[in-house]
Length: 214
Image (cartoon, rainbow, N blue to C red; front, side, top):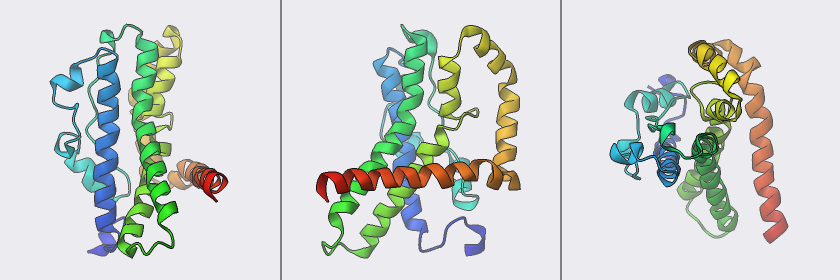
């Protein structure tokens, strides 16, 4: 059974809990910021909640356990309800990845202050997984490929003429992204991004806490 999973059976409980927290908070953050900028779409559909059932996508969740990548249910956003669609759109898109960054930072802080304090090993393993998985989601969702948040940010920041061209090729961008993710091309494209940015983020966390509390 273990050979069919992207994680070991020992890691699986920590992955499941971390995913539920990460996906739920990520989608709630999108819904909350959209609501604050005047869009009730997500709220009206019951997505302005921290109830995981409203945010988890069964297929996307299973895939991340098996293949190592997946997705939650995207929060519906109607940019026509924003007074300043471009600014609000950027902030709504950015809210999801930033929520994962904040979760990772909080988990790292707890881990930092817990070391040497007689904390049970399973709790330390949970914190480590929470940090790692949320940093992964933070970096992953900022990649400039549809339908990721990074692409939406670029789309909202672009002039109208560019946005029209982006929308014309968006379906192909999604296909290209899927090919890059699920084929060996991953190790030459996305993998180098993770191997560079993720250590930098974690080193940044360590530098902050060592400087302030070390």
